[in-house]
Image 1: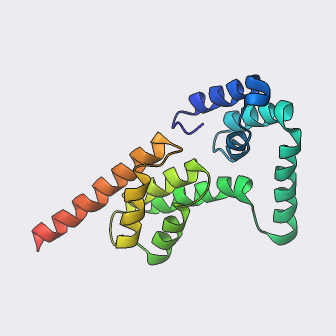
Image 2: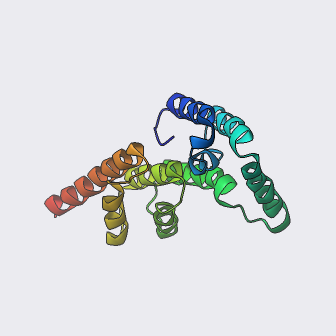
Length: 169
């Protein structure tokens, strides 16, 4: 479920749904926050068969958003993922953008971490050392090879830019 290809993620969710009691539930719960509707649908279908009580989490999060304006991890993943994508698209090294993206590098769902790393690579400039260190740690993300690759690519962009600035001075 941590692959960058949504078709692979959908197939993985469907396969987990067929495993029965042996299937791990937590990755399917996290997949409810996937950016692709096909993956969310497959995860919801699998959970409906394996652990329908887990679907109540989404209902509770929806109520929390409506009542308090605070999303949880599942629905929050959809929101945080879009925020990372937008900030990366802006490409501006505003400290508030970088701080938010740095925080998203620790989000529980891999796709948010992936988009945050990609966004930081797109911004490239004025990335604090602590953020660079976190990206270095994400090069060994145990949950997703896509996150590892995005962190590696972001570091290549950031560090290449730093070297060019040093050479230009």
